[in-house]
Each structure stands twice: as structure tokens, then as C-alpha cells.
Length: 79
Image (tube, rainbow, N blue to C red; front, side, top):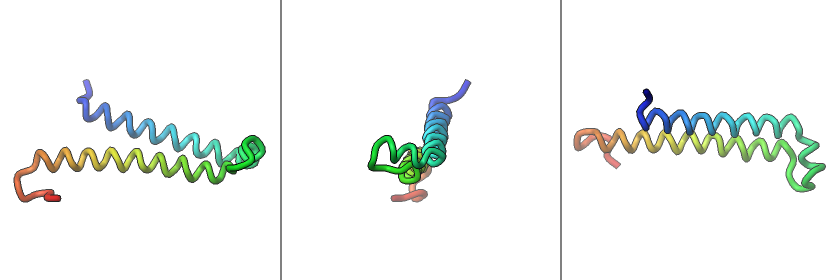
């Protein structure tokens, strides 16, 4: 059985992976996206989605770092 922290980490990683897969789909359908919406190419959308995927991972790492700092003895991981 996974701890709540491990489940949350898997959820964030899974979401990041899913968003990145969507980014690759957008990239592969570059011109179709532009033809459909007239504003964004698939390449642009790929960059936006890839940034979101990276953001999800960074947010989780920050959460884990802060949780580790709270459990550390005084003087370590000071912010």
C-alpha cells in the first residue's frame, strides 16, 4: 500500500506525463491545429503543454522539499 505522499507523487508524475503526450500530439498535428483555430499552431501548443508538464513536476518537488525541511532538525534546509 502506498503512502499518501507516494500516491500524490505518482499522480503529479502521471499528470505531467499525460500532458507531455498531449504536447507531442499537438506537435505532430501542427498545421491541423492552426487550420482549426486560426491562432495557435501545434508547435506553439506543444511548448505551452510541455511547460505545464514541467511545472507539475517542479511543484511536486517543491512540496517534497518543503515537507522534508519541516521534518529536519533546526538549522538544516533553512529558508
